[in-house]
Image 1 (spheres, rainbow, N blue to C red):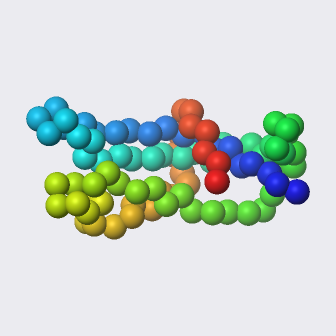
Image 2 (tube, helix red, strand yellow):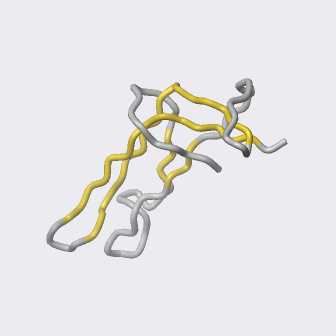
Length: 86
């Protein structure tokens, strides 16, 4: 059975008005999650975890973010609203 794990959170994006490009973004996920089947019906939570691997925008040299790596997101903090599915 295919299930969707929905995590509450928010995204903060940094925009440079001179270059007219996004330079960074931060994804913050809460511990608040729900599980649904593909019909949108709530189901029992599963004991499964997948780290959020979010990619920073390309910088002027063509690499991702200041440290040129994917920026992993850990699952903690207060809630807001983001619907993230894999």
